[in-house]
Length: 112
Length: 112
Image 1 (cartoon, rainbow over the protein chains, first blue to last red):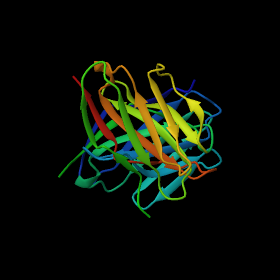
Image 2: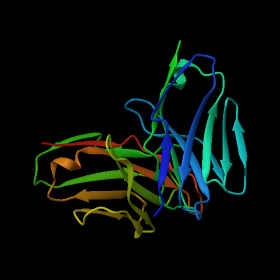
Image 3: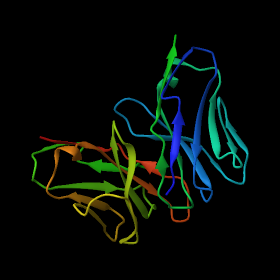
Image 4: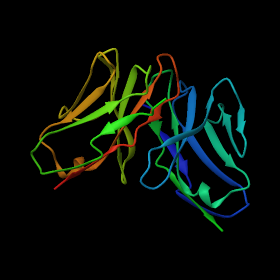
């Protein structure tokens, strides 16, 4: 089955700096890659996603890139703010309404 | 639109008991998936329902079961609770044919 790995497990950046979180996946059939943000005590929130027919997608300060050949995808956050501090999960699935396989999550801390 | 709702939000049970958790999807969403979130294992897929049918199941023992009603609301049941079942149980809903899954706030189950 699919295996999604996420590195590093923690990341600390200074406010205003950029943060990059990387994930790798194993199943070449995976074609959908969402990113979720989970603040303490709250639900995972879908913040951005990408499908395998696209190499990059941007939404204001966040972007996701996908390298299908290398089977990895990354989340980029620019101009980080303290409210970006949270746990970020990457995931992969093989189609619509399909199960999501998650990475273990990364704790991002943005220092004011 | 109202988001995914889950009840109850918190539960404390003792070993050997059983528990039923409920999930109401976003209006119009007919696919409901359940995930278990623990600090050690992260987010793991339990099962997915569409049109009252279980279409996919994760690698959990038979003590974990679920069902979906004609109004798309879903329940999951855990019988003969074990200490290791303590977790946050999340459900996510999606439109048929859609890749995006939206999570509820979860039910925090503590087994003592």
